[in-house]
Length: 166
Image (cartoon, helix red, strand yellow):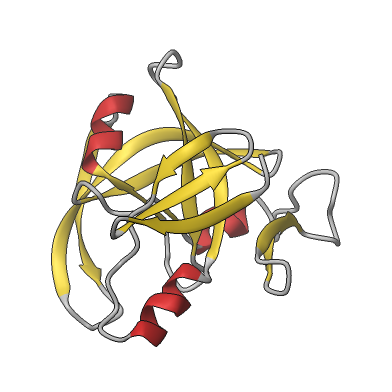
């Protein structure tokens, strides 16, 4: 699943995937043109999500990979479509220092770049771009290649994830 490009048509952003076709894309609004360009330049990867307890419920999404975020974030409509169960509520701090209470749902089987793991997800408002955070990257031993703007298996362990216990 490669060959992604982003275009703006009639004021709406459309993400095209050579494998998946047209995919709705919801960038966060920046106040200045430069902020919007920066947000569009983030790493975006196709991710397959399957409900661990309802394996027939599965979806492929284009997720922003953000090493500054902690965990997997999904919009509520995808959480609902997968039939995930509420696990707990947590307090969340955003980049602008705003604090809010959000719900954690589980468990989703996540596949990215040939690596698979089971994770809980934080539910956000509908329309929010799915997001892969550092917990997923660490557990699956994936790294971000900033020059290529893609996620790759850690070169020190290309065959399978290495879990470090220090």
